[in-house]
Structure formats: C-alpha cells, structure tokens
Amino acid sequence: MAENFKQKNQKVLDNIHSVKGNFKILLAEAEDVRVIEAASIIEKLGITELTLVGNREKINSLIEESGLTMNFKVLDPKKTYSKKMTELAKLLYEKRKHKGMTLAEAEQLILNDTKYFSAALVENGDYDAFISGNICSTAETIRAAIHLLETKQGYASSHFLMLTNKGPLLFADCAFNVNPSAEELAKIALQTAKSAEIYGLTPKIAFLSHSTKGSANNPDEQKVVEAVKEFEKLLLKEKKHYVFDGELQVDSAIVPEVADKKNSGSSIKGDANIFVFPNLDSGNIGYKLVERLGNAKAIGPIIQGLKKEAHDLSRGCSAEDIVDLVAITCKRLDKNN
Image (cartoon, rainbow, N blue to C red; front, top):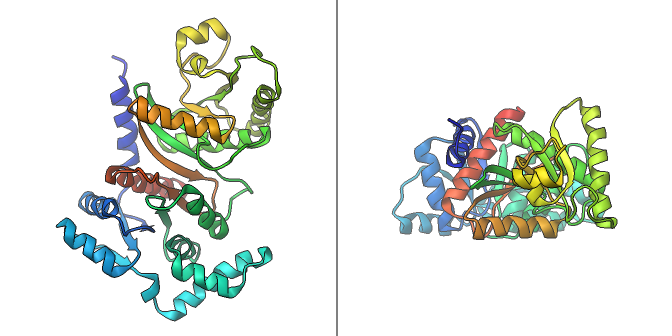
C-alpha cells in the first residue's frame, strides 16, 4: 500500500532525528522559555551537545521558573574572559574591515550581539553551528552568518521544510534573497535539491510562476523560463540529474489532474516536492499561507550555501520547532563532514 502523507512526513522526521550526540551547537538567543523547553527535550533525547547563549542570570532564572532540570552549559558574552573576546573581535574585524568596520565596532558587536558572538565562535572552530531567530528577525541572523561564516561558492539561500497534507515539501527561497535573477534561481534550486537529498527525499523541482509553459508572456515569466535553462547548465556542470520543470503554476506542480491538462508532457506530473519561488514576496507569502491555513508544519528557514552551518527560526516558533531545527542541523553536519 502506498504511503500516506502522514507516513511520508514521519519518515522524513525520523531521518532527520537519526543523527545524535556528535556536534556542538549554540542556541544564540537562549533568554526565551521556548529555548529552555527545547533544550530539556534535546537533552532527554540525546540529540547533541547544546550550549545556551545569553545573560547567565536570566537564563538560569528561566530554567528555575520552568521547573526543568538540565545540564547544558550557559555561555554569557559579558562573562567570557577578555582574551577570547579579543580573539573573536579581531576575527570579525579582519572579515569586515574592507567594508569599513573598525575594531571598536567589532568588539561591541561581539560583546552585545549574541548572534555575532555565536557566529564568531563557530567560525573560530570552537563550535559546529549556531541557531537563532526565535527573538530576532531573519535578517539579523543572516547578517551575522554571512559576515562571519561566508558562502561556499559566493551564494547562499534558504528553504523551509514543510510537512503538509501532500507530504514533505521544500519551499525556496522564502527568507533570504529578495528578487533573485534567473541564474540565482537556478542556484537556489540546486542548493535546495541537495538539501532534499540530505533529508532522504528524491528531488522533483518545480520552478513556479503565474504562468505554465507560456500561458503568459512578460518579463517575470521570462525570468523563470531563463532560470530553467540556467539550471540545466548547472546540472551539466555538477554532473547531477534531477527531475525538474518550469515555468509552472502551482496547481500544475501539485495536482496531477491539472498537470495532465496544462502540461501533459512534463516530467513533473503534479508530484513536485521542491518549489522554487520567483521572488521573496511570493515565497514568504506562500509558505505562511500553507502553514497557517493548511495546518502545515514549517521548519526553518534553513540556510544553505554557507561554509559552516547556521540556521534561523521564525519568531513564532514552538519548542518543538527548535528541537527539529537542532536535529536538522546535526543531520546536515553529519552529511557534510
């Protein structure tokens, strides 16, 4: 019997949670009861080694108020010895001085911004990854990550792992790049396909548009058409083979009957599991609609394309979301090491 969507979603979750205990991960905004609850769950499940970052007194007070017991280390930038802080500030300064950052500015960021402090520790090799975004905006998480961790090939993007009534889907880019070019959309598609493989999925990629195969003719539609051509070039260069098609309206990508009517010869037969959105507006609106009206679980945004791992949370996240993102981080670290 074919797997139903609940079984497919659970299979992906089981895959994500299959790696335990080998990595050192920083939760950069730990002055939050959701982080405390998540840390307690992570400790019980033995997922990995966590360190909570923030004001030590506030974090310890939250732990006490929660009634939970845990043995995780708490790292307070303002109580970290001066030699280490100087080392981290110099690291940031060296990476950003070409943009006009002074050493004094770097010192203040490392001291007062837990995202920069955490990102510097990861870049310095003290930790394997950091996660933030439960309190700050996505832009703040991304800024610290880009400034310190840099990109592998000059480009980074993000995706959400969506657990839906169609099974697991990846939406990209819903948090990072505002108006990607055709070439950038192709890069987003490739990065997201590689992420899908980490989660145990076989990528089937739909380049989304308001048009299906020329049903409209305007610059926005043409950008997606060009993105598909650029993606073909990337696959040849990378010696990869993925199922993909575009430009497609979303119903052609997920409804077999509609796909048969609108695009019968397509390799995507209403069974896409990766949606590449044409811009940030459509991606962000799309994932939130599916999450809130379709009762889907949205994990992320998960950043892809950095030299080291850093990931973001929605400010509306639950403790369970934090647990899942920590597990995803471990899975990605395990796959990429």
